[in-house]
Length: 354
Image (cartoon, rainbow, N blue to C red; front, side, top):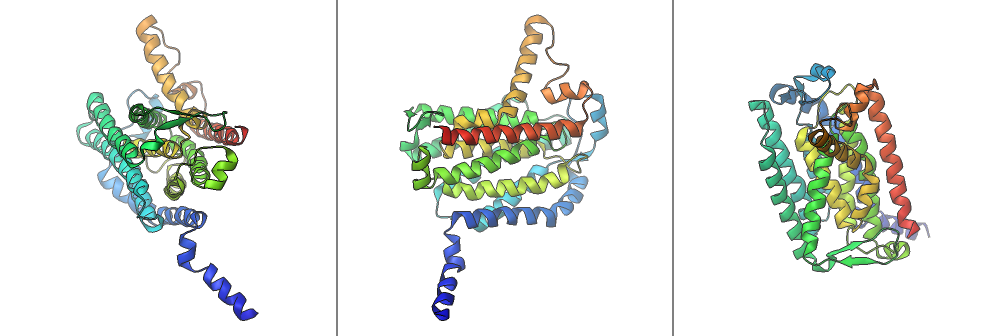
């Protein structure tokens, strides 16, 4: 009896069998990226001080001048961590893995070029060129998604069970809109120490879970959500979560390093793609409501000033408004992270409400 029990445990716990369990690989990927961050984070910061120092962003409160010459390009470290962990733990026979990593790489390159020009020329690439490059990368990702699985060209409606809209070729435009909009919204949020990454962490946790649920046929059927073949994206989502937690260790106030556009654009596109590939992109305005507010505050500020000559906020994005009201930077960051967590919990509740 003991022999048979030992044999059963050996077979059940063998690495080969464990590799087929998404939950095991997700936890392993999270811990791998987190440990990698702790092991090499200080080394990367030292290198960034030599090559990647930048000025504080324009149109920020005067106290941000103290952040001049801070090391940036922390997004490079995040992406390296994500790629290494993903290649270790993902099933590399799944095309979805390569589509996702291509998206991160594409938006990361755009952000890298913008950061590099800011460091070397004191001015990033033009807004028109940057936007055009984002459209090109998003269009490539959208086309890959559509060609890989044309049947997925539908949009699930929150709060309605088993109802989705088949949008056909419009799906490509929809994907481009979500990817570009989310990446830019996260980029606008990245203005205080730990602000963007602290708000991304609960979102990565949420959509890692959603990808798992949507990629599990029985659970998707039970929750009345579309079955999306997204279980493998759970692994990449876990690496994003672990890498983000590791980066927050160094980016929390007072920050030792900034993520830069290479981080914010790539992570924003990654969050959007997790939502798209799990067929739950309409949860994104709920869970990522903070990013929506940040983007809307900038749009409203610009329109108000152009149309009336008056500003709605003391400064946009809205986190700078609270700074000028006298809120401490660390208080804004923590409160925004709490709001993001609450919004993610509300979004998660809608999966069961349907």
